[in-house]
Length: 140
Image 1 (cartoon, helix red, strand yellow):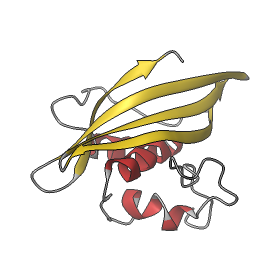
Image 2 (image 1 turned 90 degrees about the vertical axis):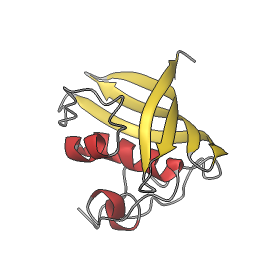
Image 3 (image 1 turned 45 degrees about the vertical axis):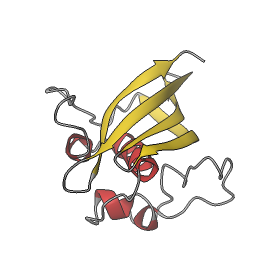
């Protein structure tokens, strides 16, 4: 798996259409499997998208704020859902411990295309780790 392209494709507001996606091991794999800690909310957002693509519920639970994490979280890979890509529209550090990331994740279910457009809120905890808090889903 480490030699595969990363599902997030290195998405960032500056990198709209990457010419080559970074390898999983060099990108989100270092967080999901390698024990490294994302240095900002955008890196966490990308790695969480990748965890959804891979069906890695444990990583999603670990990176979700305890106060808002659902008890029944299960991101097991759904064979009917095919993730198509991630676009980071903006990453806004609000202060040293709070940030927002607006993104669009595209996927197909049963041959029908869907878009998830969300502005997510993140907080850095006392241990210095970024965590997902919640998000506002947009229709546009």
